[in-house]
Length: 448
Ligand code: NDP
Ligand code: 2IT
Image 1 (cartoon, rainbow, N blue to C red):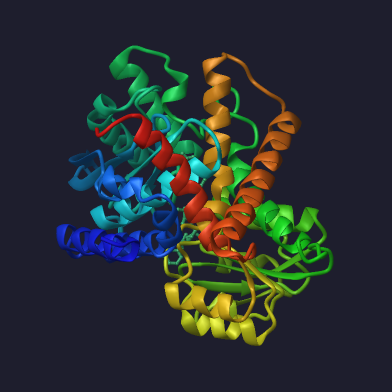
Image 2 (image 1 turned 30 degrees about the vertical axis):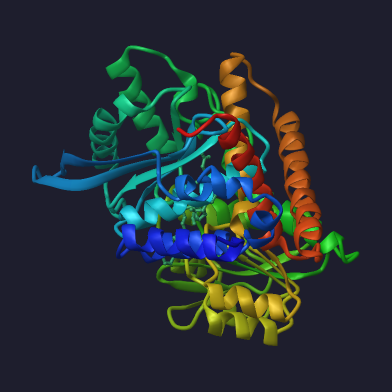
């Protein structure tokens, strides 16, 4: 069978075996579309069934999460953990708490995570988990009881050498604290390295909170540098206003750019003076309110519940909210306004049609598995510190993060040039570089 027939056959079988999981199909298709040149050079990977094995998670866990709300009513949610691939290290990837979570979404995220984690160069395999729990409007007590119930079931599958979750949408330092507390209580072990994203002071790493947003901006900075440009004086639009978005805004401002708009699921705000970061953090992280509350405190800013944040003209777009939030129309609008670079802070925020529009228009495009790898890379730095019972300074840790992002960027360009001839093709570079590292390890470890 030739390379493209082999790849097509694996994709057809993946679709057949995983019906009604469109996000998973999309994530698999995006990787497989890059692998033709790899299988032409390395037919041995077809002989050892690397792709067939990569597309089938090593283990998939689905469990009931019962909890009692503040009114005394019993609630039931569904919990997930997909342990996708452990060729490079313990399963590593976040937990998402959002009402939209289902098996297909967890699988798309876990699949992406394999290649992202490989690109970081660290010893981490790929996994992802979460629950269809909606944290919005829930009290601290409800969040705690939910996290405790979730961990009561999940703990038996975790371990610092086995599976190490962290945060994602709806899961931040507060939730990681409750999850860790319950794990410690059940196992009677202070196993710091079993979760990352812990608050600084009891096992957390400096820079982990900031790492994904900072890393995405470093990645965009590296892309711009290949054209002799920087952030100075550029207009930037960021979608979302959660963990990734907030620290992307912070780093853009530090590099001399101006973020003029950001969003949440209720709409977007425009602040031509540049987003006031302290106010945004106060509204989103402390008060946990809707983004419209920002404009109440800042009369010059405006809020819109209609349209999208990508209607706002900008030089750089950083989608940092969720999957498939930036579609064909958004991409057309961005290109029309002269966007120069797009770096995905979120996982798969751009639809395939949008990505194609950016590529056709010559817009620098950094796919999530490269551009947002700074978060999980810093999680791996947290694991290193935990294993050594050590704690590094903010500066030391940020220096490591910056070096990792430069390396991820360089790997993408070098690999794209080698396998496709165009160093600007970051999609090809990220997919192939990530795949090769995992495939080599899987080959060496035999058919398991
Ligand atoms: P948060 O929960 O902190 O923030 C999520 C933000 O995205 C919120 O502003 C939220 O708005 C918005 N959002 C979520 N779902 C939707 C939706 N369906 N439609 C519109 N807006 C939505 O999550 P993070 O910042 O941690 O994660 C953001 C993205 O980055 C995700 O794709 C995640 O997988 C990815 N990522 C996160 C990493 C991390 O370290 N945290 C690492 C790498 C990637 P609202 O509050 O209204 O729901
Ligand atoms: O998508 C991601 O890379 C994350 N949510 C972070 C995972 C991690 O283990 O830090």
